[in-house]
Length: 493
Ligand SMILES: CC(=O)N[C@H]1[C@@H](OP(=O)(O)OP(=O)(O)OC[C@H]2O[C@@H](n3ccc(=O)[nH]c3=O)[C@H](O)[C@@H]2O)O[C@H](CO)[C@@H](O)[C@@H]1O[C@H](C)C(=O)N[C@@H](C)C(=O)N[C@H](CCC(=O)O)C(=O)O
Ligand SMILES: Nc1ncnc2c1ncn2[C@@H]1O[C@H](COP(=O)(O)OP(=O)(O)OP(=O)(O)O)[C@@H](O)[C@H]1O
Image 1 (cartoon, rainbow, N blue to C red):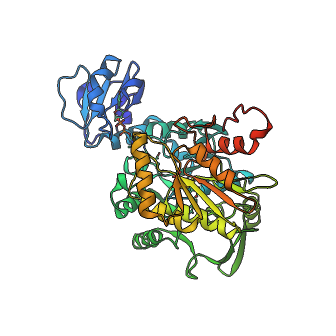
Image 2: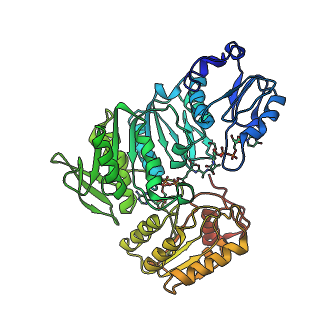
Image 3: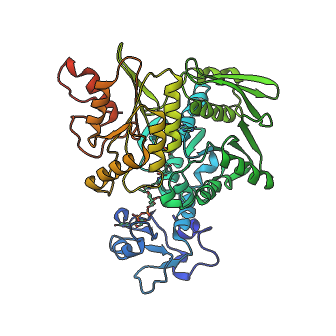
């Protein structure tokens, strides 16, 4: 491939003579992936600086380098750009032949509900003959094949490579604020952009809610002129987004409780036989879902709003939602003939915890045990509110370990104790070993009680705990079945 052909957007103006005829064999921003004839794009990162690896890249065979520093005297041509992360996105798109341009692109953003809404939409579309690639937190699904996911929104080279590989008609993407802020979607345009909600999260990265919102807003700048924004109008920031798009004359379809919404919520039931009743231009739509919780009904409404833009009948959409298969690690219920109801969920914001505990109450929980922890190295300012909400809406809260990342175990243990004493109403305890915390709740829980384990969903434990299990699901199954023989591991999907 001729280098200058993929630099169209990345470099303004004429290229130097020594670059005109260079051909390249690949592109990467990671010196460890360099092969002979590659273009190396040096990116200034959050942990390290790609410019420090330029010499390694040349030694390994890079035939040209792009960066955003003033660098002279390299053995291969060097092109300086203003922002090499952005340039990488522009180059990735060209290198892979602008693959998103050949797809119907659906981007879903928001603090919570992205994964659930994508799975709902995938099920509706696929059951009605529309093949989908799904890119998100749990995994990426391309042409029906599952690929491990390292980021919710993959890095720009990986993303464009997945899109180029896809033979599916539609791409449903979870779009994270990090991905938007880091130009991972540079040059990609969307047919539908969905906004689920915005709550306190990731402020370690964005600083303020306003900046977090502004990062999310970037997705809606990527809407095609013919595209449609689908917005949860009941969310405070959803309202702000609506105003912004209105001023810009961008088409938006809004759902919410106000009767001014395009899809007005008139009634719902969140517990047994959950449903949400919607008024769409005096035509009533009843979405039934095999999954409790108002939050899931909102996710289903978002999925319905997009699906109805496809040539699929209302009845077909409602049938698919009624038999929705659920999402691994999101409101997954484990219940034996007798004993407590156990739920494994991915809630990791105060708002999501509120929804979970509220749903358990609405489902008739007699006593609620809530087990959770905090990710090390991530937004610490959300922790107090998570403890307050848990303490207020559960009967017993047990603080335990989540992934430590770069934090130390002793430090986290004292953080848990301090948060519990400062923000709970005295109805909690700290059990650092996550498997023992679950064990204690399962031993105490009786028929009619609910035990809610949040934060990790299907993710594997990063630390070793007391019981020989590697995830919340394994721990629950191990404890539920431990009298029935030796445990050999269930190995999560
Ligand atoms: C803090 C952060 O967001 N980091 C993201 C960022 O990494 P980075 O480019 O800054 O990486 P870095 O390690 O500082 O390295 C800088 C540069 O040096 C290069 N390098 C480095 C070492 C070397 O030997 N040679 C070399 O060339 C690297 O390839 C890179 O180009 O860009 C990478 C590529 O796009 C991302 O994979 C990476 O996500 C990390 C793994 C991460 O954990 N991110 C989280 C916070 C995140 O993005 N989360 C959201 C979901 C959030 C949610 O809603 O829950 C997501 O979309 O996943
Ligand atoms: N619409 C919603 N409003 C509030 N909370 C929700 C909503 N949907 C899901 N949740 C809660 O958030 C958790 C994560 O849901 P989901 O994985 O669908 O969201 P996500 O946006 O993909 O999250 P992440 O970016 O962290 O992967 C769920 O387990 C549930 O507790």
